Length: 106
Image 1 (cartoon, one colour):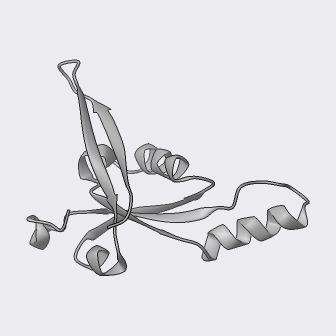
Image 2 (cartoon, rainbow, N blue to C red):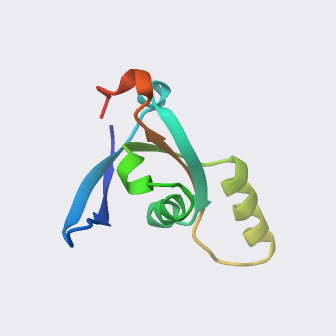
């Protein structure tokens, strides 16, 4: 595992839960269930998209992988052609524990 990021969520009693989510290797991600994917200019932006579009994202997410290529490359190329000086995009895939792997890697 390389990097990690904290996700927080508001609890019903007014408290805040803070959870560390880890960057996974391809090997570690294989035993987990994919929640979804996002492309954006930063890891934080991709986490926002995950939170916005995946039900109970903060509770479910336990890890992520980062890649370039695919959609991120297409966006980078389009911005370059348009003469825009924007940050390079990344693709992030989010993972949760699978039913058969509830003990988990992370």
